[in-house]
Image (tube, rainbow, N blue to C red; front, side, top):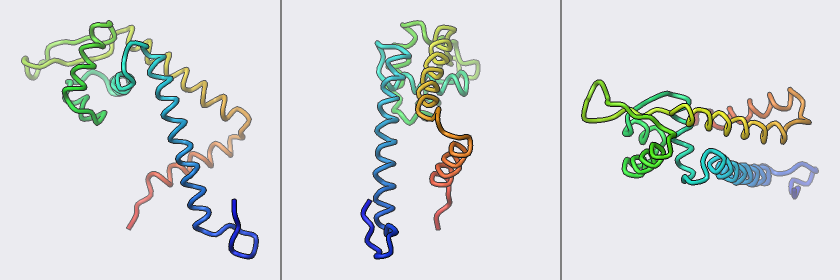
Length: 154
């Protein structure tokens, strides 16, 4: 990193540029891990299917429209993926008791097992990257990332 303050310390704009570079590196690594996770979940599905499955794993059965809104996808793409996932036996569907014209979808046993295995694989990747880190280093990174992503701005 270039130091330009004359006293050996990096200037604020140099630090912010370095931060941006590291955030870009994290985003790229996250995208690559997302692709790997999607392929691990089911190689015949688009990566977005894993986002749907992961949401259902965390929050339980819901209508396709609720799922679409929650994962920030349009309803037609979500419906198409849900149809493919049902055909592969990853999702179960039942009539919506509140509106018999719609359905509630949830993970099948196979779908839950695949999400759990995929999340375990993702966890192994993080553990491998941080296995030589101290608990204090991990806690500091978590705190700083939380501060970066949740801090209120005026």
